[in-house]
Length: 111
Image (cartoon, rainbow, N blue to C red; front, side, top):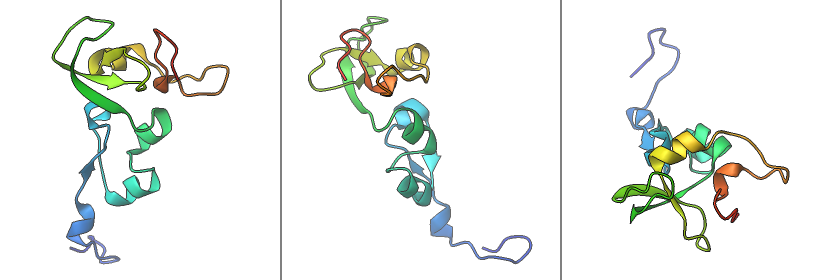
């Protein structure tokens, strides 16, 4: 496929987008090139929260609902926050140690 100005050729395989590993949070599709340039994540996740782990069927410590996908902070921390509450509760900010707060459980402060 060529652009309208015939200045370049685009391989159709290069135009396929892939889900970000944090798709449940960001809902982003990115090209392989973008993922490669951002530690395997979409630009948003690479800057804001890094790669997250998700678990199913855990009780959210904020809304107390079960059967939702939850964000796991750390294997040492037993608290889980569902994706919906995670989106509402966490805004981009940095704590005094210059650590990203998206990786810190607000209940027990496990990093």
